[in-house]
Amino acid sequence: MGFTLDKVVPWGRSYDEYIRMFGLTEGDLVLRVLGCGDGPAAFNSALSKCGSNVVSVDPIYVFDTAQIRSRVSDTYEAVMTQMRKNKNDYVWGGAIPSVEQPGNVRMSAMEIFLADFETGKQEGRYIAGELPSLPFKSGQFDIALSSHFLFLYSAHLSAEFHLQALQEMLRVAREVRVFPLLALDSTPSSHLDFVSKHLENHGFGVEVKRVPYEFQRGGNEMLAIKPVYNPVFERDCAKVRSPSI
Image (tube, rainbow, N blue to C red; front, side, top):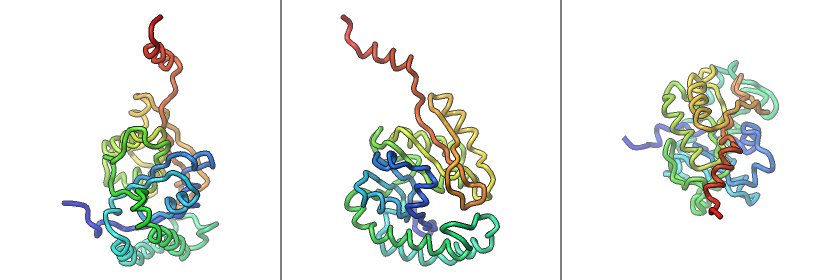
């Protein structure tokens, strides 16, 4: 079966949340940024208005604005009901001081996305696609981000899927950041150790970093992955590239 909108529960994050979830610096924001599974987030719209190079990829982008807006409306109350039911699983404070506030924050983010979606689609900033196969050239981006998809759905997606997805992100970007590292039940993902060891054994530096964001209780860490610089390897490669004298 193909991807259908009735499988999706759109829930967009704000620009400020992206900055804090991924520990993004001013230097990061001027790089070529890819968001994997961004859904109806406000990040692309806000960052592109600053003149930055940002692309978001998500299967939901195959639909139009009216269809996505309708699905947001259909699922909103169910999401809020679940959040109220499980309110002790979240940290309340700052921009989201109470259980009634997340809806306002999320709807504001999604409205920013919806207002920008058609223009962004025409400009190539919103592209329909999904992990573990991305429609981009190798090395096309500097940073690839994954918010609330990998590790969060560990009960639904295998360790092998996670590894394939991360390898694909590393193919198209020189650094990958994933947030959060908890599964939906707020326990550490059972896949984290497997993918970390595999990537480390294949020449990547893998680091769990604390970030200045926590909404899901205990979810205040991201995974950062990038190739390890090996000066001996680089020197040997340079010798091969250099013509003999």
